[in-house]
Image 1 (tube, helix red, strand yellow):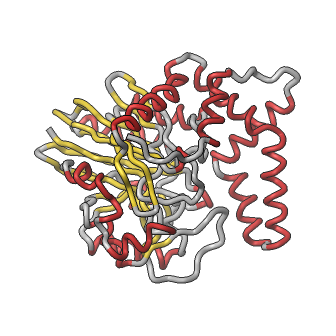
Image 2 (cartoon, one colour):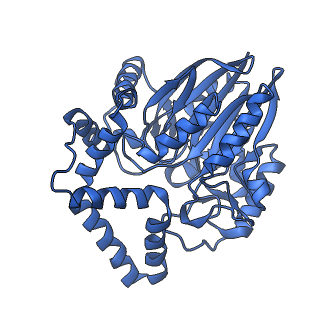
Length: 390
């Protein structure tokens, strides 16, 4: 049996930068033993690791660590870094090349991005305790980072990915598909994410794992295969003192004979000093919250109902505020504003939201927002961070 641990977004930024720089192990707190129990550890490197100082023009924030911060990965150690995300190219091609070199010098293998289309879309296979494990890693290609023949990330090419998964399963591999996708901060994955993740699962992926929403989302089992729609943040600090922005979980998988034998979740709190495993009472409450947010996935119309609940929360005022914010940015900083607008039109998470929100606004009788799902939307977006409890 091989034990695989999958963690979400890692970046030595904000409050965690000095922690990683001073004591790379300290950022993981009492989660470190959990990480080290696994035979193979996979993490999403949500930044460039480079000495470059000039970022690209893009819609969102730019993140980078220094090459020395790779010690924060080797301290565990993480053997595999996923690079299919919207930040690995934040410092351009030079920053990406340096990131690849830094990780490879550190003995960390990479998947999900490359200097050619072939390299970006290639699956990564490793042997762990006699079992062949194959990882495919992809993202939405936000800010037009998806590879179209040159440098970039493995983009939203679900047909290509399902073909890769089927080939791996024919060899008897244990397959993990990891996607960086979806709408940030909301409790439910949008319908297009659910459709794609289920397609990868049905193609044979033993586990499909998501990150990018920066909050935990639900779990789903399909024919003995697991889908975890979002693990939330990992070693990635966000200043808002909101419960779900500061709470995430790692996923441990037990692979036996090319199949998922069992899985477990390991929840934690993200503090300014690093990670802290949740206490017993906190763990119970977190597992119950995860069960609640998973319920729409088990209903025939649950995914659509949950999405409508978020659209109702977003409402015309949310759309108006977002558009006016972009227009203000275009007036103050035209290239940044243009990047923001372009991203809203070209990236699925934004384009789908705007299309479906506008459709709802136009409807004489919009779909009702199920109260249970509306309460979860409000909870995920507004629940404050509470003091530590046992």
